[in-house]
Length: 109
Figure 1 (tube, helix red, strand yellow):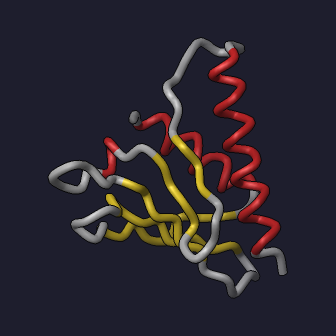
Figure 2 (cartoon, helix red, strand yellow):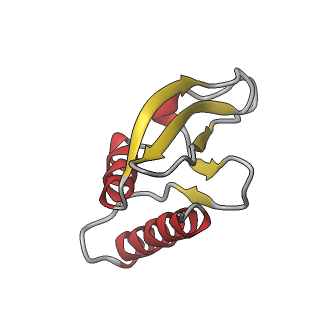
């Protein structure tokens, strides 16, 4: 999808105290790349893998279609962007909020 997915995801994570401490390469199979995240005062390291499995190759990070936190069932699909206030836009923001809430609760100290 587009850069705005990454921007909105990063912004939502930062509002919850997470910082991207490393951007790691993918596995040349199904993961386009990985973000390593940490929060101040929290020993937990969170890894978010960006899904990029395609028919013949792994998609580059800017074309990934979803992400998931490693070793959990929490995932987020990158929907198409629509006009602000539209049903799909509201749906994306709701899904993003639930994803951030789920991973923050899981790792709360």
